[in-house]
Length: 233
Ligand SMILES: [Ca+2]
Ligand SMILES: [Ca+2]
Image (tube, rainbow, N blue to C red):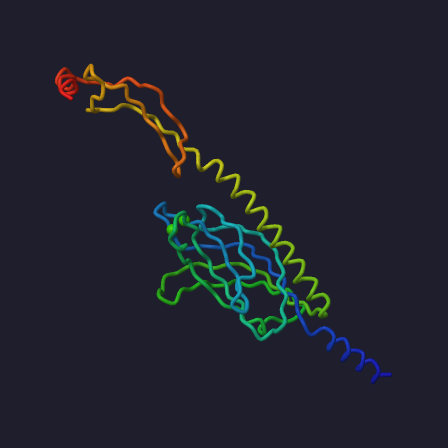
């Protein structure tokens, strides 16, 4: 009887040789200042096997951000390191400022038990205190089928996310491309007509395409001297 139970347990163990890593990114504390404002816009990037497996949302202007984000990562091999980096989101072409990183050896996590961890952040080129993150981890043994399911669910989610990011980018393009131009005045323009004056107008082009043609406008002349100069043309 005992022997048959052992065999069953062995069968189950052999069947469940993969894992799903449940991660609950809770919060950050005492994070580093990376903006002129005296604060930062932190987000966390998780990598497994050199691939980014999750990016948290950005919490603007906050050194004690509350993320409260949960996600799952399929794990084929438990002898891997999960690395995470906290970054300060900045507008512009330059890379976001590093705010500290950390590594978690997956084999150090006990399977099927919720591990609440305080992750101290560090950066190799500085001894500056960078604060810490509070993260819960749970490594759950799963079958290959379950692992496949998690992978395909994640793919669907990231496709949906990309589509919604694309949609919101289109929306923001419509709005960020509105430029208000106030045409104030022209000075010292050239006379082109027989009467020594001109009937000036201004064309605006964007990417070679005419977007607005201003009709005849009045030329502002501030002084008699300027008017005389104007007449000389
Ligand atoms: Ca910055
Ligand atoms: Ca920033």
